[in-house]
Amino acid sequence: MPKIFFKHIDKITKWCEVHSMSANPKKSITVNFSTIHNRHMPPNTNITMKGETVEDVITTKYLGVMVDNHLILKNHVDQIAQKARSLIYTLLVLKRSRIPLA
Figure 1 (spheres, one colour):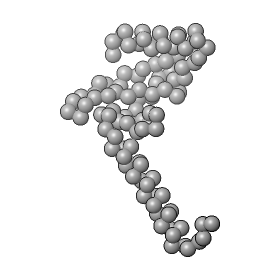
Figure 2 (cartoon, rainbow, N blue to C red; figure 1 turned 90 degrees about the vertical axis):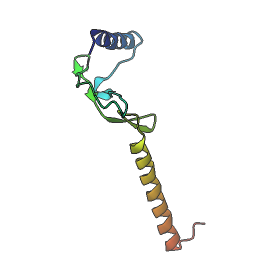
Figure 3 (cartoon, helix red, strand yellow; figure 1 turned 90 degrees about the horizontal axis):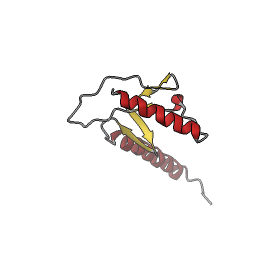
Figure 4 (cartoon, helix red, strand yellow; figure 1 turned 60 degrees about the horizontal axis):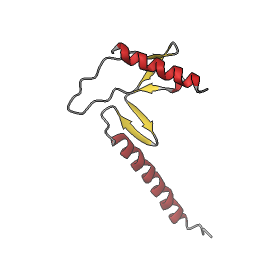
């Protein structure tokens, strides 16, 4: 990883401190994005912030959407489909119980 990258991480950390904010390395993650056709992933670079290593992940949830390192939404779609199946099953059980709702 080029030195300029780490220089920018330091700038972000300092900007946060100047503006009474704190960048928390324990709540931060890194994702190495690439295309499906270019599966060559750079090696884990062990990015550090405030002397602590930032976790490198393959999949993360960002603004409610599950994205992976290839920007494929399969995990997100699977998660939404599972929630829908669960809700449909719950509604089916309620319908079969014939409990009055009002």
